[in-house]
Length: 237
Ligand code: 6PG
Figure (cartoon, helix red, strand yellow):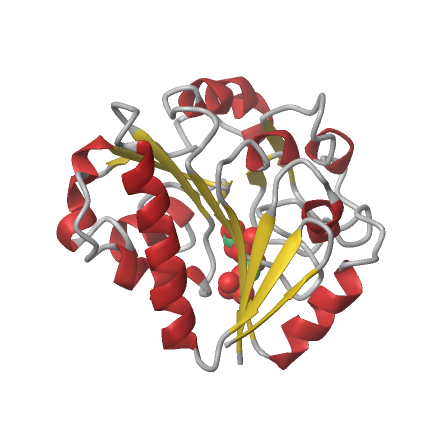
C-alpha cells in the first residue's frame, strides 16, 4: 500500500482488490459504528456498478447494529427495483445480506413515471437518512462520471453546485440506456466520510486527468477539486 495527497484528496493505492475491499469496508464500518455511539441511526450512501461489490461482500459481514443503519443510493437507473439494471437490486443482492440484512434500504425509485417528476419524492426519501451522512461511497466511470453526474449532462448545473444545488437531479445522458436520478454534489459532499473507489491502470490515468479537469467535462473532478469535504481515493490494479 502506498499513500499520497493533493489538497482535499488522500490517495491510497492497494496491492490488490481484496485488500482494497477489506480496507474500505473497515473504514465504512468504523464510520457507521462511531456514529451509532451518538445517533440513533447511521446513514450510508453507496453507488451501483461493479466496483463496490467486493466492498459490499466484506462490509455485510461486519458486526454492527445493522438494524440502526439506513442505506440509500448515490444514484439510480429509472427501472423497477426488480430489474437487474437497478442499483437498488444490486444493493439488496450484494450488501443487504448476512449481518447487513437487518439494515433499512431507502430506495430512490417509485411508481412515479419519470425521474424528473420524482426529484421531490427523492429528496423526501433522503430526508429519512441522518445528515450529514456518515459515509458516502462513490465509483467513477471511464468518462469521468460519478454517481449519475455525466459529462455534458443538463443536470450538471444544479448537480455540481455544492452550495445551492438540489439534493436530487434527473437526466438522461446521451448513450445511457435508462434515465437516471442522481444525488447532486450538494448531497454527496454532505458526509462525514467520503470515499471514491476505482480499479485498474486506465482508471488511474483517468483519475489523474480528473484532478485538473473541468468538472463539466469530467464531473468526478468536482469531487476531487472541492475543499468542503476531504475525499479518500482507494485504487487497486
Ligand atoms: C452506476 C454507478 C456509477 C458507477 C460508475 C462506475 O449507477 O452505475 O453509480 O456511477 O459508480 O459507472 O461503474 P463500475 O464500478 O462498474 O466501473
